[in-house]
Length: 449
Image 1 (cartoon, rainbow, N blue to C red):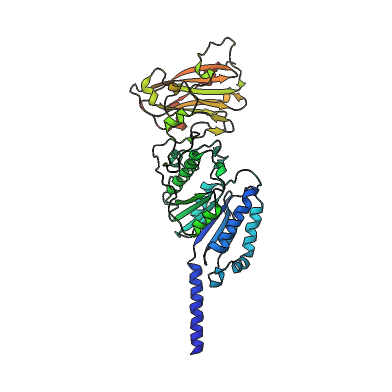
Image 2 (cartoon, rainbow, N blue to C red):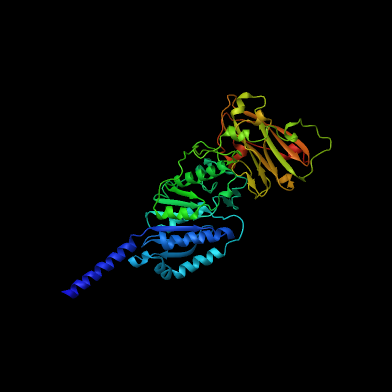
């Protein structure tokens, strides 16, 4: 009898330990591989504290390089009661902890703590989660984003994306949530961004965190934590916090553009919202450079040189009050194979879009302006204008395009034969779409053989 009872108790203990291990939670930790030296020790201390003291028995912890989506180490806290204590965990998990330590020691030593958050979150949701299990993802790194393939960069000068990037197709935006409505359902994201010093001002901080919250919520997930203090973020993940930390409303009509917040502080009790069109307009100088505003003088020196430094500007609504609420957009392609500059991609290796006006710039004597770096071959330059939004009862909108080449200014009046905007559609057949005008550069600057 005693033998049978002992055997039964052993089976119960085994079953209990297995159940504890099987019921553990799953944590995915995404680390930046570029942690500056000052941040490395802070991250190591917080992460090891989480593994040895905060995680529960049976919990699985998958640690990844969040820039390359490559594994660093996988740990599982044993389910037995002994592993409530830190020392037994340290001994049992010595090998994977050493892998983590080695990874952290390879930090870049300076600069930005970069991660590829959109790609890593997608990877974790699709490949690291088992079925539809609840999942906690802890991101450790800067909340900026750099994509050289799409020439996409936010974080520079305090700029961040508008809500419009969430609705673009994946081929046009790394933040597309199209066809991802339920991808992150049951996933809570906890983001340790490591330093408050990375923010230009409060408006910058709130704008960036609001955008990431909407990006995650658009896939049915929740940005449950966002703070510089890594220990606090890990603790909230261990506590199972899974409700959104930011309450924001999506602007479904927002244009996909980069927002540069005004240089003023926003009170902590104010609602988080994108900068309005009027606010963005008021944050730029009230008058543009002379080449944009002065009268264009007739040229007496013959045709323009084929190669030179180039700036382009677009203006509309000067003598047409109805056109002042219309949004036109300038598109500049420096050469075949380059990334086109427009409101969708304001910065490329070839140049900058300095201002995307959402209404006529005439009220501020300005132009929507692109400046190209270095010298440009004018025979390879392409410029187009799109009627993005608004309506005109005349069924057409007139505008002016100016081109600055090595100090000389050329001007071309244009007419867009459409009564309403098409929000940038038809870009692949611009020469046939009435919402688009393609500028004849050869004619504009008189590029004769």
